[in-house]
Image (cartoon, rainbow, N blue to C red; front, side, top):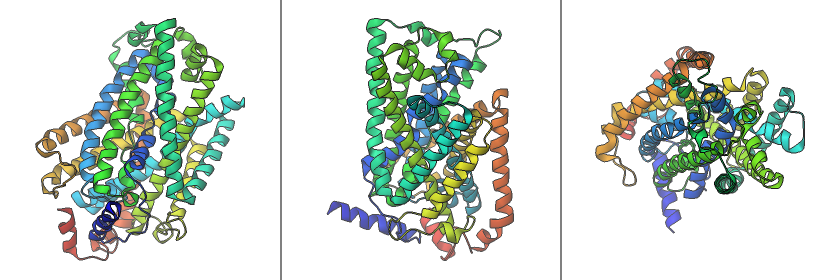
Length: 486
């Protein structure tokens, strides 16, 4: 009975924004949390970027992780307020459109689209060498590309079958991720404590100090790992229209996912770093963490943990693809996306925007086929979400005192200090990810994507949005925007 009452309230909330319920509401708190937790996927982020940290700032670079965790927790609590008040698929596109204006909202949607499309193959790229290693395949670049493409196809098929199957797989993957990460912490931690480890590694700067000069610059570069990993918690908000009691469920899911990911990730990084006994050998390893596991644990135990990691990374890509397709659907139903009539269609059998899923698949294949560097993809998928977060929170800062109150999640007197602290953090983070010479190419890629978005808006969408033919004003009275947005 309680669930049915929640569904009625959810449907009423959606109707207030002049949308009809087309997607199936099946996600409860755990599944919503699982969506956010799997998108973050500390397994994926740490396994993909730990080698970069070691080579740029040494094991001591792991101490950027808690700094980024705190910064992204600030973002998460503000996004939680927004999700509790505007529970719509499309997250930042919807929020910024209502808080600032539909034009800036469209641009936020474009940045989110670029991020999600690029991050799916980036995540699967982290999966490829582990699969190759388990099956004894060649780890050459061409082999890895085909593994990524095959993985993308499987993820697309599962997503097209229905959100219930995808989220069930994802729910299971949360358990495998926790078992894998906590298992590594306990087993490898036990080896370090009782068979010997090197705790001095936690302050070891590796080769970063060999060239002389300040270590600070090298240390800052290591923030890429946290900035790449601790994002995507807003995927729970992007699936709000498939969540039961979304205003209550989604805010909790987002905050919990960041807090747990940050805490478990830090302990994992400490244990892995303390387990290093031969730093030069680890630095030369193709995959540092599997190398450390295989050198300190028995082959069977190491293989078990690698399988857990493989499942977790696969689920991460699966749920990101689902999130990307919902964003495309949200933009298309407002007619502010390419071929909107095609991509806003929802399968009557599965209640999934199948064409949107196929688009994510095709663009993912193109991205991985033409990408020159995994580091470039990782960098772009760090700058884009940070930029999106800044746009969203800046819009929130402008209208935060005009938002309707929520009975479920309200920052109250903390709203203003947390908002401006988050803005300062995001400006600092974007600087970290763009100013160092190592990241200039990444900054150029992100800037070009944003410039393309601005041009597309001016040429294709600006006039229609201003005239109310497309966008959130479409087919409604002008006053409705103010009534709903505050």
